[in-house]
Amino acid sequence: MKKPRYDLLIRSRTAPESTNAHRNRLVPVLRAIVRELTVEGATFAAGSIAHDGSEGRSPRVAGLGFTPASVVDARMDEYDLVVIGGGSGSQVATAAAERGLEAAVIERGPLGGACITRGCVPSKALIHRADIAESARRAESFGVDAALEGIDYGEMTAAIHDTVYEKADRQEASLEDAENVALYRGEGRFVDERTLEVDLNDGGDAEVRGDDVVLAVGSRPIVPPIDGLEDADFLTSDDALFLDERPDSLVVVGGGYIGAELGYFFAAVGTDVSIVGRSERLVPREDEAVGEVVTESLERYCDVYTGYEAAEIGENDSGVVVTAEPSEDDTDGDGVDLEADDLLLATGRRPNTDTLNLEATGVETDDGEYVVVDDRLETSCDGVWALGDIVGEQPFKHAADYEAKTVSANLLEDADRAVDYGAMPHAVFTEPQVASVGRTEGELEDDGREYESTTVPFDAAPLGMIMNADDGFVKVLAAPDGEILGCHIVGPQASTLIQEIVTAMDGGGTVDDVAEPVHVHPALSEVVYAAFDDLSSSEFSTAPDWRDVGDG
Ligand SMILES: Cc1cc2nc3c(=O)[nH]c(=O)nc-3n(C[C@H](O)[C@H](O)[C@H](O)COP(=O)(O)OP(=O)(O)OC[C@H]3O[C@@H](n4cnc5c(N)ncnc54)[C@H](O)[C@@H]3O)c2cc1C
Image 1 (cartoon, helix red, strand yellow):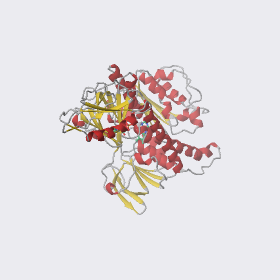
Image 2 (tube, protein in one colour; image 1 turned 90 degrees about the horizontal axis):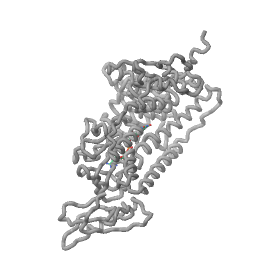
Image 3 (tube, rainbow, N blue to C red; image 1 turned 45 degrees about the horizontal axis):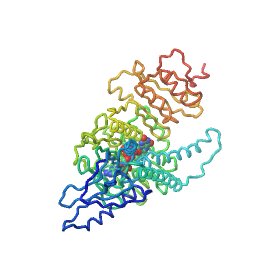
Image 4 (cartoon, rainbow, N blue to C red; image 1 turned 90 degrees about the vertical axis):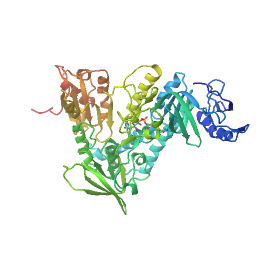
């Protein structure tokens, strides 16, 4: 950290156990004092907090340094590294601090970012409960006499809310207590390429400068321009996760993974759900065969309108009316009016780059306002890095964490490490689950790439058959020399089953590398084994195929 020099320094020594939050709370107080100060008729410029003062780097000292107003260059807090966004970005700050550097994190909301309080964790907590309800409903088909007596919806969402916010609070506390990390609770925006002004949540402001800066401000739901939406009440995923009461009916606009997951959840807990999706299938970015299974499955839970888009939103006495029209000229069918208590918009997310005043920097963005980075995740400005949803490559938490690791290595160790998304998996937690890594068949066809493909259904393996997972499958796409090009799984535990393929692809492995190791019998991983064995070079197969057992 560069040591600031001041003409006048006001310092306040805080108690040894005080945290960054305590120190940050001193800033507005000290600023208010200084605004009243005059020396020889000159009003002093409002300075900024100096965690250091002139006595080394003790994080236990708060203070303000000031220069006379006539000196234009007002002082600020200086760090080796400033991270904007306390989701995955905060991992770069803690990695820097562990190496003895001084880092700052600027975060306006709960620590942990979207994943902990608005995304992955609460949505999967809800879906886990939906799965439990589903198991009770299906118990009879396994000869088990179970009844679903009811769901205390408000209690369920309150419990999840408390759990995730407690986790965010603990994350905040641990960042505050970390040596060499200062936490600024507020919204940051660039003043110049290295300097950020922060509107502090509890009043006042601060100016923070970093030798390096990491942008990690995430994304937010898109609110599309639909006629009548401006006068209607609607939910986005930000508000739909913690409702006190379950809506009796719901229209979900958007058939991507968030719309499909939340559509499944609400339907499974008893809401009458309609999903309007613009494409031919739900989850249209998945391999076509996967999208078909998910669409057919969700049609058992919801009214699914694929090939439709919301054209107009109106209201009636009991709630909302969504007029959905065929989205393509060649789609058969007329417009349809869907009435429901509530409307959930799940029409994609946009990067929060517009909050940053990037115009004050040379950081370039693309047409979608995603930050343009090189393969080391450095932006068009030297020493300014970006990661996570604002990069737009893979809008998933594990991708943001992987990028945080890459930025840490490049920024802190000059590792010159390039990101490689070739083995980046993702999952969709619908019923059945989806997991995928690598290319889809459609992408390979578009690329004109030569490939072999096999699809093995879950009921080829004993456990798949026992579980009645007859709509699930493992699909493998491989090059003629055995290189794994893609794998797409739909069925129970797909999100876990994909992992061995990710490991193989990450190591540059071939289908033989998945088919050769022994798989536990009678686990569902035997379906993965059977699919890879089908394309492997092995002459001797022990892969199960229970579909034929007992036939002639
Ligand atoms: C409903 C839902 C379900 C999801 N489920 C999954 C899942 O199952 N698996 C998965 O991998 N991913 C899932 N995701 C996606 C995942 O949450 C994101 O990809 C991930 O959180 C991105 O991390 P990030 O660090 O880029 O952004 P975030 O985690 O969003 O962190 C960015 C932070 O920056 C802060 N910020 C923004 N602007 C400013 C500013 N100007 N100043 C200060 N702070 C600012 C925000 O408050 C936020 O806390 C889901 C998302 C949603 C919405």
